[in-house]
Image (tube, rainbow, N blue to C red; front, side):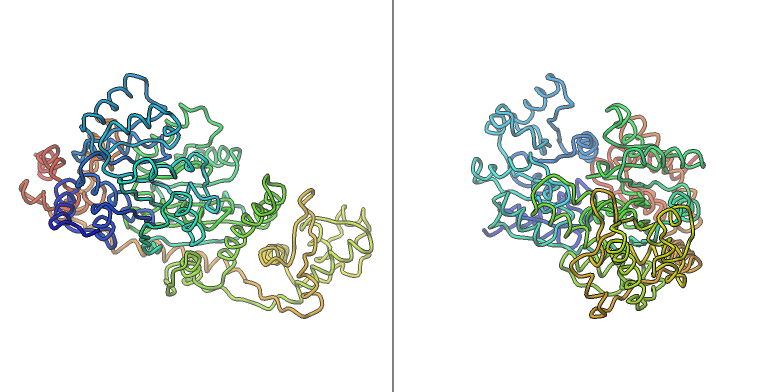
Length: 611
């Protein structure tokens, strides 16, 4: 369908008037044009790439109300607050509201007094919600976090399957499905499950050049995390991810005890505490939240300076989604992961014992294998990450493997020694053991357990003394990653795989990654910090910027909204640098739309020139 002349200029006018930006980011204009014209779209755009404008602006340009399907109930209030602050008539319907609140929003929708209405997907199970939508004039349907519909994705949610019926009931209403992360397989499944096979696909670059990806072996992970925060991210807001609720609690307590303000977030907390901790993270500067992966989807906080993982993510898609919560403002940020042998062992066991059929377990294994390949690569991590999503890339010069290239070494003999030890234990003693005990045998340790089982009499006892314990653990970890070794699901014992004999017979060469020395890792950290320098404000602008931040904090507190709802840091930086002296000049600053100019303009100018 052709776009009526003038509608794209209308979209640009909305961008300038409402949101305060002069031009669309790369890809946005084409998507908006497509949807404004009444066409369906499937949009893949990285976190921080401006996905929300791709449906918000068409909703404002087209006749009717834009209906946004989002799983982010805890964040709907903040999303609506941000839109209202920009002068957009927005509302939401979800389970947190009482009957009177819902009735007000429903009446506004029917009367055409809303520009955007946010709905949780489960609301579509309720007949009254469908009847309500029938009574209104719908401009478009936006399906946010669309990967939730795909079982190949990392966050499948059954309620999203209901959305396949939108097109059947409202065939003339355009639909736009959006996600920050999806492989080709996931993309195909999204299109199929949402009846979007005929929709145009828009795939933006997955590259987030401002994020520095770093992965290192676990070696006292709490100490490693504390070092990262103290040396590179002192006073910064950030997210620390752990797999278990118990770990979340312990890490939050550990950081707080060491002078870093941190709060836990997981499903086991009572709802009030969980909501309060999330609210504090969004509204306060410099707070660290320690969380399970249940936290963070759709977080709009732009100044998250780091995302740290203390446990291995289950998939590259999950890892990319979680690390993407750092640096939404485009400023330098860190994605740091510490992982070890136990992570690999535990995740393999979880897959083997997971519910579901063999095909489901194979999917989980494919996801984990890709994640392990990213961890163990000797090439640029960014290139590996982009390749996973089907995108080419060049070495970035800003990940750990680029900054301190790791060595690879021929680990065939070491692999043969390890596999031989497992064979000897099985065939000669009918015994199976975990990695720690096998390593003790290889390194010749005569400890109580070795002596108890008479394992110092094995022919492989002490044959691996040329490597340290930590190096042997790296060998085990990498053989597991390469599928040359497996873990028994019941007791965690090491066992051979179908490909192990190839190594034992010398028919397969095994190349392993040698971890960089600690001094080199410190160099990478220093380089990361140095890269922040180019975005620093001129010295004369810093006091102004801080005054603006203080003013913004007071406004946010009075209104009960996150600070970024008032203005993003990037906007405050530009104001502090440009020092506008009139409302006209202030209105030219990126991020200052008409409504915010009218609401805050005079206060900002007064803040720039204090008495």
